[in-house]
Image (cartoon, rainbow, N blue to C red; front, side, top):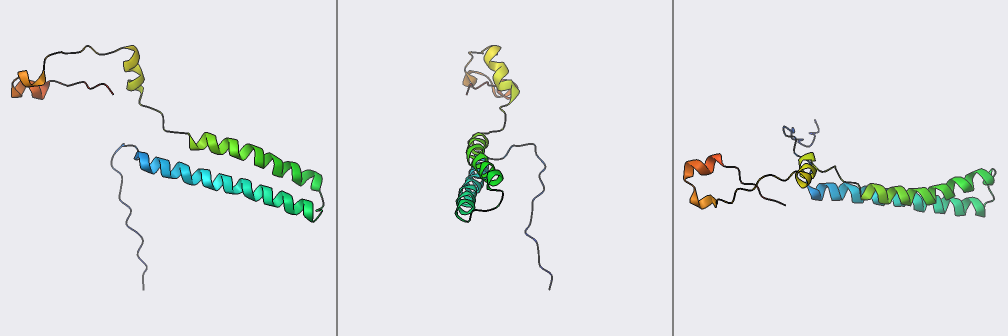
Length: 119
């Protein structure tokens, strides 16, 4: 019997991932990194308990993991895709506003007019 793989749609757009997908992946990455930190803490405690050889080498490595991993986890959890360039450019070079209400235009004029909405 042939096992079918899950259907994976082909992406044909340059659209970015949804905010929920981005948040979920950042949360998973954070939990994994903090789990590694807990593993470093437990490994350090076990190494001290059994008086392992080369303890002078292993303890600083575990300590370094317990200090650097939370810092990296927070940095990566707060990491977001960069904002689009035109958003920043619009802050410094605002577009000219057209104060003509859209409903005062004819249907043909409205289809050619671009309405600029500020975020």
